[in-house]
Image (cartoon, rainbow, N blue to C red; front, side, top):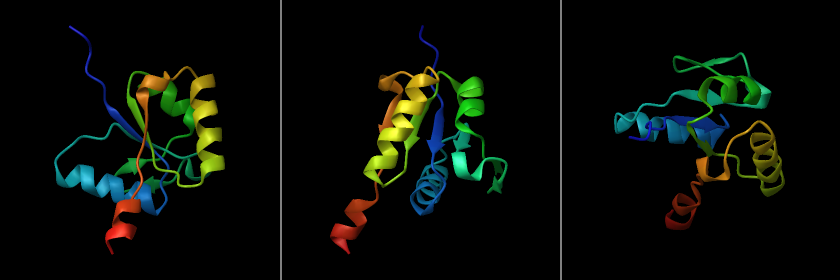
Length: 102
């Protein structure tokens, strides 16, 4: 039986915070939060980790990237790949539907 994968949110800006709130509202456990610029800060009971520390602790988890800037997204994907995260474990979350429906 394959080990179940946890969830890591990459990016703790507005969209990352929104995703965390949504997941928690459905009682979906988030293993960790990762953000290069906010590593060491605390948010909502989580200590935000650097990408390298996050991958060390949660290498088999699904990384949900909440960054909205396309250039930065590409950089994040490269960093995660270099750290050993499989492309199959990277997903992207955007709140753009809210903007369209508003």
